[in-house]
Image 1: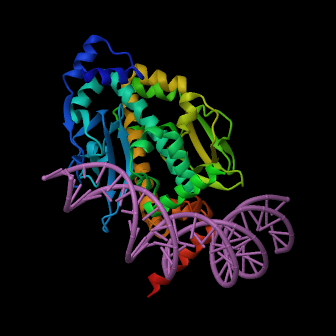
Image 2: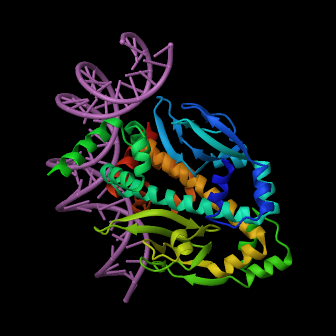
Image 3: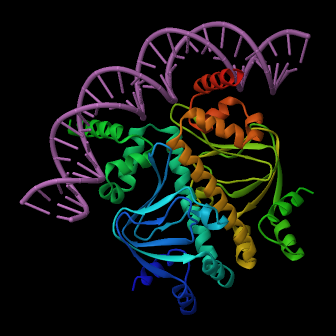
Length: 196
Length: 196
DNA sequence: ATAAAACCTTGAACAAGTTTAATAAATAAC
DNA sequence: GTTATTTATTAAACTTGTTCAAGGTTTTAT
């Protein structure tokens, strides 16, 4: 069962008893998502916290010229959500789109708050998870203000080999905040340097 | 009393009864911090979550050339902490330094966890707070990958007039990820444009 | 199997941002 | 109130990254 992957994921943060596992399971819905399918589009409200069982997603904005900017990827065992839209029921500025065919588990806000209120363990798990994501994001921002594109690219490749192997370079460039053309030049330099 | 400012701050998230207020108050310590004094230095462990009652702090790294990069400011009614160091008891790479003479309230990890475990309300408050900080950071990152320095500067000035009035431009430049010299050019352009 | 779409690379011209160095202005310290 | 220190500005030369346009490769859809 796919729910097992989620239960296993929660093991990283909290110990769930049978009652709690059932309370969680019955509040989760499972979906299969095709490549290029959206689970969130601009001007929608983000109604779900999404756990990726398998596959890969990107969350991004599009500016007036149609250029995309990747805020985040999410692959197996990761959560993805426009938290701003989710909590404040605001229309989102973001898109969440499947880069690969995917299977996801989703929980909506009423069910999540039910779990938080009746089983504080879950609030603990989500508090810790968001803290970890905050740390990661802080680190990424720090790199963006302190390092050049080549340094950021090298970090990305080393830190997320699983992503950099699966993603087209256009997507990586968009995540790093550079153009695909410039990433191409960086890669040429890196390869040349490795050679000698 | 300075603790009242903190209690008032928690009002934004949760309703505290007298017992809870006391449990919080007796776990908080108050300090006065001079300008240029550090409350965290590189290679220290960050033992406290710090609430700023009055004054202003910056959190930053220093690279091998001695250049500083500002990750965050914190003024009245804001929290500041190297969460990575705080939770994992890791040596920090960051400095937290007072830009103005300040008064702070601090809570350490054992006391914070005591509150979280015995009064889940507090975990709720901190979960919501970190979510809000996450949203803000996500937005800042998005700007860094999608907008140029002038656009980022204008956003900063409009969104945080309180900070941009109190901070030297060197500090703002470091936050935006540009050199003070280049910020000076941007400001010249903005003024010229406003004029005509 | 073929056509269409997406992706990658290259190069030349350009724009954005940095570096260095020097001077002026503002703030803090005694 | 004067001196020392920090902050702000300017300009020229340089580096990093973008834009545009074109051609080649790979992937996807039918």
